[in-house]
Image (cartoon, rainbow, N blue to C red; front, side):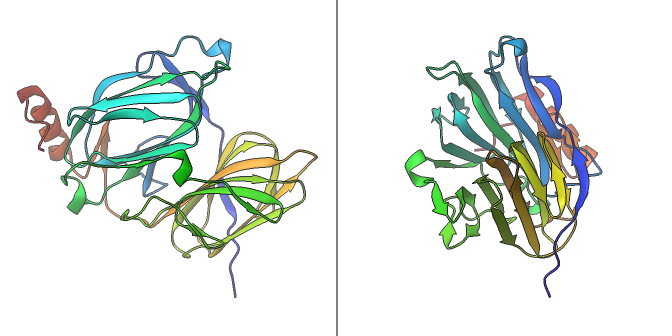
Amino acid sequence: MQKLRKVTAEITPKLVMEGAGVLLYRSISPSQENPFDPFLLFDHFAFNDPTQGVNPGFPNHPHRGIETVTYILEGTVRHRDSLGNKGTIGAGEVQWMSAGSGIMHEEMPFSDDSGNIHGFQLWVNLPAAQKMSKPDYQNISSDQLPESIFDGYTAKVIAGEFEGVVGPVRDITITPTYIDVTLQPEKTFAYQLPETHTAAIYLLSGESEVCGKRFDKSTLLKLEDGDSIEVVAKGSSPSRFIMISGKRINEPIMPYGPFVMNTVEEIQQALQDLRTGNFIKS
């Protein structure tokens, strides 16, 4: 018998400032408690609101021990790093970057013709055995990420598999699912997943009933263990949400700014490597 997951936590995104004055909405922050293992951070940035001020971007900064996932809905993000990689993440595109042993990079957002910049950044933990691995990228273009049409809804499957559609992001340790869904009124989205995988839903717009509970604003929902998820669109407008899930790593972590390692000593080593010019290993 299937066990429908229930909502165990409702998190209202908080407006925070990061980088060089970038305002964004944060639902998950890295912490030693690590309640969303393997997910460490989830940010929603929408720079088209004039009250948010000037958003110059994220100048050159380090990462170690994590993967960063950038998904753009509107506008572009230009990036470059210490390994010589550079490019642009445009609307409908994804970059899944594994920082591994260490990388220096910058991410600079630019608005589209309508003046909008809109997207998400997710941080994914790496297990201890991979934290000092070689940095790597998966850059997914818009034509690799088509919108699939189903009965009553559309979905972009970034990672994982849904209704026979396999996402273009592959070979990630946590076997993630990352799906962007737009659901028409009174239609139902149902998904089955391993019972013990961490799962969360970020409600972006519209009214939704998630696993039997109704919501009408941007909220991140943590779901208990179980093997199925159900979302029903309510109201007269479509509902849009992001669903993420992944296998837990079940290791203690030590987060410190852009680093997430397993011990204090490893954080101290990362800082020492930065000071002595030994941070980049590849």
